Length: 338
Image (cartoon, rainbow, N blue to C red; front, side, top):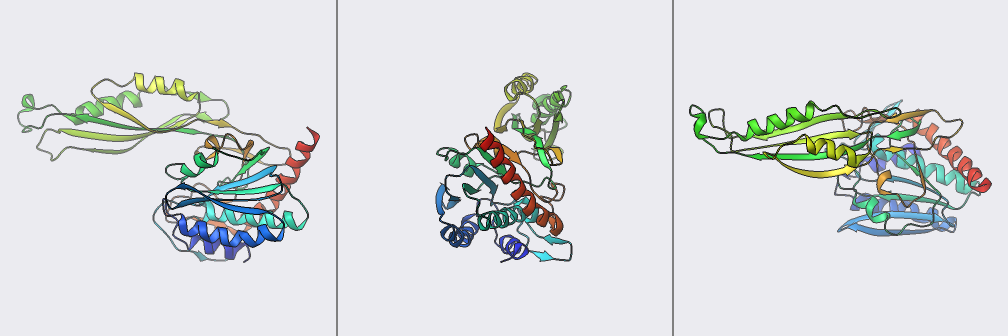
């Protein structure tokens, strides 16, 4: 398959988290002949029941490419026009995976060895694939992680803090507020306290941001609410532990707080000759701490990821194949000089 055919084949497999088994099997079967042709080895490892990572290596992997196989809902089959490939996972991250594979094919044909490719499950929700891979990694110097950066080398990535807030009250007739206890009032007061916080700002990553994504509660407009809950995501740019203290300190005991996920912000390596940017989203990099020094680069725009109009420019994919090869060669020179 050529680059565009491979991308469309990946998109046309429903890989919405946690349904990664089929796409993992496809990639294993696709990569196995490439591993065998160039004296490499390929393995599957179960990160969770029915959810397998795929890792292929040639020699002792000094530089490893990595991206994720899962996508967000809904499944959207592929289509193609002169400029773009469309569909779920086009830029996040099936087009990136295809570009990495084609770059590796070219590097192997040119005689470059000591390479690897790690394809993981669960990045969009639970991170199981990256956490599993981090338990027993090879001795890697550099990790090239793939997310849509429009082919710019990311010099920083915001983290995230996901909170689930809940409150309990007592239902009563809305005409007799003295007989009830509104859970919604408790929740709203605490959400207002969060919104009033002065959140940290980083010189490179920029400001922290807070989003109240969902609010649920009550039974009807004429009933005092007996329950209420909200989901909040803060994009992290500073020390995660200090931010947690700040945020939790703003809440009172009328709400219960559950920290659903927490991912630290990271500062990343830049290299001469590569355009750079800062990304506001999180990646698997903080969960792959034992896979060498991380870099982040990939074709496509995050602005269309997770939307019904998800797409990836063909031109950027072709550029990424060349950029990935350039990146590997430059990193290998750096490693040899160290």
